[in-house]
Structures are given as structure tokens and as C-alpha cells.
Amino acid sequence: QTVKPYTDNQNCSGCGIACNTGYVCKQGSCQKSVVGNIITFGHYEQDNNTTNGKEPIEWRVLDQNAEGQYLVISDKVLEHKNYNESYTDTTWANSTIRSWLNGYAASYNSDGYDYTSYNFIDAAFTAEEQAKIVASNVPAHANPDFSTSQGNATTDKIFLLSIVEAEQYFP
Image (cartoon, rainbow, N blue to C red; front, side):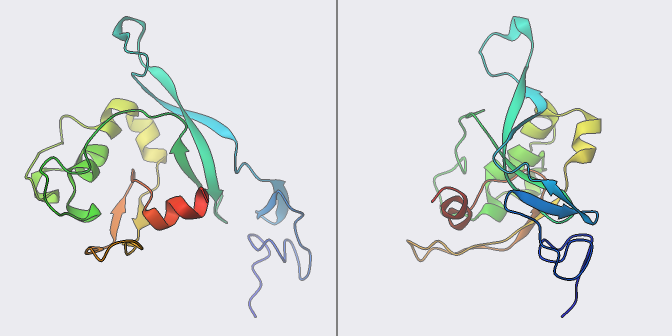
């Protein structure tokens, strides 16, 4: 068995040294986990009053990996958008919501919409903030209730939780 003393919760800083509940092993020491906490990152119009500027976005931390990176979800609904602009069967990889969230060109979605100039990531985050958002592997989970195509995994900075992930984090 390989022990990673800098990131292993069961062997933090050495064999058999386990972190207590609510703590994670980070850089070889047990540190308080931020899972469940609210953090602020980015700004987006939320109160329908454009004269007072964009409001800070509050994110709930759902998970934290061994490298200290967070999986977050906005604590409030930020926008109302269709999963796909046309009412056709589509997967996450080809959806217009994926393109809008990440600022992708028309070739990224089945409807051919270009979101390079109008998108969430540019509206909500400065260039410096965008550089801090890690591009993540987004798995293509099968829908547990329907036999629809799960599509292909993608790599995105901003994404929606799959049904499987939503049930994991919000049982």
C-alpha cells in the first residue's frame, strides 16, 4: 500500500496518523475542512438593480480534494436558462448551457450558438479570478431514471452537477 503523507487523511504526516472528523490532510497536517462553508468569489447581477453594480456570488463548498481544491455550488439561483435552447435530445457535451457557462464558440453546442461574447464566466469573474478556476473532468454519468444517452465526458471550468452528483451531495 502506498501512503501519501501530505494528502492521505488516514496517514497524514506518517503511517497510521488519521485526521479527525471534520479535518482533511493538507500538506502533511490535519486542517479543518471547509466543506459546508460559504465562500464568496466573483460578482454577478442578482438583485435586478444594475445601478448598484453586481453583487458578490456566494458559493457553498460541497467537497475539497487532497490538493485543497473546492467543488462549489452557488448558494442562490443566479440565472434561469434552458439546458438547451432547442427542445431536442442533447447531452451535457453538446448543450447550450455548457457553452453559455464557459463562453464556448458555436462549434461546442448542437444548436450552433456562439457564446464567446455573451456568457457567464466572463460576466461573473475577472481574468484573475478565471485563472484560479480549475478546469475539471466532468464525467458523463448515465441517467439513473431514463435510458437516454449519457454522452461524452468533458473538461470545463463551470458545470452543472449530474443527477448522480446531485443525489450524492443532496441525498
